[in-house]
Image 1: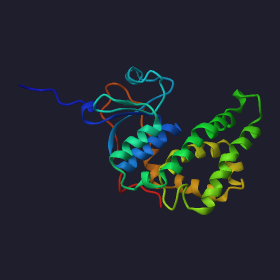
Image 2: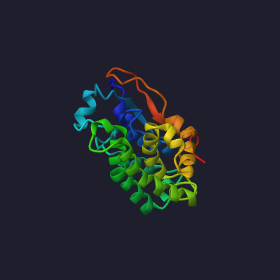
Image 3: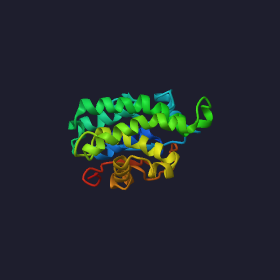
Amino acid sequence: MLTSPPTAEQIYPIFYSFRRCPYAMRARLAIAVSGLSVALREIELSNKPEAMLAISPKGTVPVLLLRNGQVIEQSLDIMLWALAQQDPQDWLDQSPEDAKRLIERNDSEFKYYLDRYKYADRYPEQTSADYRQQGEVFLAALETRLQRTRFLCGANFGLADAAIAPFIRQFAAVDNAWFANSPYPALQHWLDTFLTSNLFAAVMRKYLPWKTDDPLVLFGNEAGLVSIK
């Protein structure tokens, strides 16, 4: 009896992403480093595919559909899923409790002020400079760490660096001239190290938005090719 060939969903986890989203970016960083492969579906935020909304009605990226039907909707959970299977650069071993606390602060306090700094016209209660100043509290904390160690939780790039760097990138991009002249030289060097790495280049490749009949596009399996040193 002839049988149908397996579908992409049966072979690879399905990963919905949006290139510039910092949450999707950090998920891609972990997948790339883990050496796993996923079926990438790049989306348009203005035209979200029904296939994604069917498994994750909240409509935000990243979303990962595993082969067993489980859906992982949080970026940090996707990072931990990938690294729990393969962690060739020992991202999870670098001060895990310290990294967890730092990521939580990034995702709550810092993200709050980042959004208001980036879109100050939507939040007229304070000025852009006010929001930036409040976000700088976190920048100063990172600067203090990076004055002591090369990366956020030690001598090597790890989970905290990957989870936080996309958001610092966004903050810096609001006013690149200001950031370049800000009193955070260690943070500037850390961010530049990230942005000029082959790991960042690997996760920032451009893909066309996915359509239902498109051929399979694999992302990942980058272990050994991508790293930050």
